[in-house]
Length: 488
Image (cartoon, rainbow, N blue to C red; front, side, top):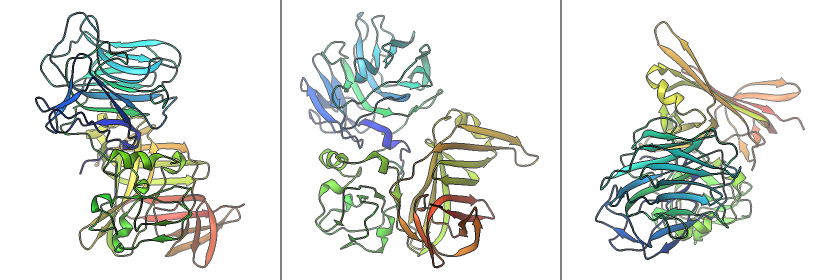
């Protein structure tokens, strides 16, 4: 199943699916944007890029989405979609997709010269253009994308760069719950309307999806990020479609798992500090995060959520797995790594992965500079199921290469960040290998547990202490985790 490693940064995902004539449009992102349908804009099955339907835009028609969360001070963003114009020319502006408020926004439109252009207003109070000499194509589906990154806006048509702005200073604010909108088909006052069809629109905050020419997707954008494989699990009082993850406080020790079988270990838990106890019997929809099947449930799930807890995944790992392996992704690209190392501390964390024979991937890798490298550990069970557990991710900022005599070019991709680890756990670790002291603190080498983070409290070999540092060293011959006590 395809997934989007940057799904948590998607603030609008519009598939435009439904029955012909329907006026219902669903935001499939976890932002759960609130729709205002202007002019009874409808779904049409006359044209579709994916899913059998699209949105029909014309005079007096547009869609407005107001975001339920704030994204300000962005240094990168992407807006994109598929358009099918049935009218071009005439010397008028025609807006396809606009994200943000008037003084801080991104927009893709056809200009008065009937050429495609990207427009960016930003915090410096300036207006910039990624203009082009390329016209939209009449009565044809075409992918359009505007990417803001590294102080430059780039415009793409069907994956080919057609326009670049001048240097841009400052940031942009796309999602302000008071003034920020995502507009489909026209400007907020109804002017500059587009005539035709639009399908598969996506707005991504804080990520440059494309930094060089690319091949547009051949199916709908994914509705989810990386997740563990879910077994055949039932939840008392709930449909199986809801069995994909729950909001839970990191300090909780009392969770009633009534009706769940042992494969509950394959669920992902997200921190929610306001909850003191959770019972899954008769659970309220507000406890479903991101995977809820309706916009209302997604909206409820986001209310009160503290972003500092979102990136911490909690997994229960049972002891019935028969083997483990590791997967690595750079943005949407899977890397065939031969080894990796992590060093997580209460101040700065570091991740380095080694890719042998990187020659065939070098262009794709360099095009994803400043995207995130993500490491997952997979647990393989006797019944064939797989539980994927998040280990660490980091912004990729450095590539080193070396030429080998037999193995071709080896690439080392690395990055480092200041990572404040929050919501500590108390975990019991097993299989200590060695024990020593380092600067007065206890240091253990032990069996790998990917849940462990700095500031956690661990119990191992009869000793209990808080952690200052966690290190992983993984290669063909070595698989160890090293932990160090925090001296308080």
